[in-house]
Amino acid sequence: MSSIDENMSFLEHLEELRWHIIRSLMAIVSAGFVCFLMKEFIFDTIILGPTKMSFSTYDFLCQAATFIGIETTFCADEFPFTIQNRTMAGQFSAHIMTSIISGFIISFPYVLYEFWKFISPGLLDKEKARSRGFIFISSLLFFIGVLFGYYILTPLSINFLGTYQVSNDVINEIDLSSYIGLVRSSALASGIIFELPIVIYFLTKAGVVTPKTLVEYRKYALVLVLVLAAIITPPDVASQIIVAIPIVILYQVSIFISKIVVKNQNK
Image 1 (tube, rainbow, N blue to C red):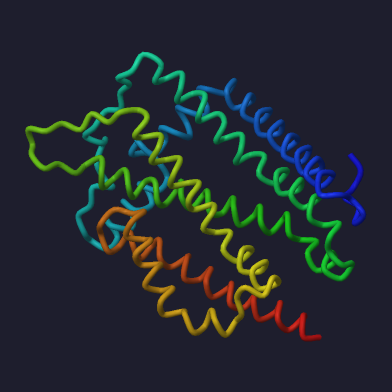
Image 2 (cartoon, rainbow, N blue to C red):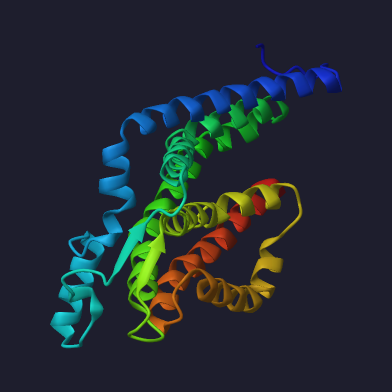
């Protein structure tokens, strides 16, 4: 397909967008197929990794707790729960869905590239020059967010929810879909949240938000961050603080980026 021309009709723009979407889906499916073939690594090492006490996050937190001199469940030999499948097609469905999500994460830079190819012809030369690092920075933030969700949010949630009991007579036998859903949502939600500076950049370019607005509503944003941290983490103060800190930092970075955008627009 040729690049988008300013004389294109609306239907031609839709046709161009359709091909960008098709190529993005093909990349996701291709990467997902590779992940499908790597079943043992994807599940035994990555997905089920946080269920083993040898996981790097637990080892670090155990050493930190031991150094401080406090008792913690991070130093246990194993988790007091099992993961099981209760439906006939449960494991196959989990395999398919996990492969697709993994394919999306791996092909995220290419998906951004297709998005950029669609919108870049409508930008001025100066705007293109200032936005050359868009794919790299957006991908970097996304991958950092995914790693944060996987190595921080997921272990904290599993450690709390997997060991929590209302009675010793109730045994935790966690369904496979429930467990994978927790890992998937923690990683993807964090990846999306870490895109906040990029979102603020485009909203500022569009005139929807300004640095002044972001500063004025900072205290409300802080409350929202704490509420968000309380929703996506176990109900303990330490976990909520660990999650809230990077989000607050991202908000401050977003204010700085918004100021730069406005300054360049004024020039």
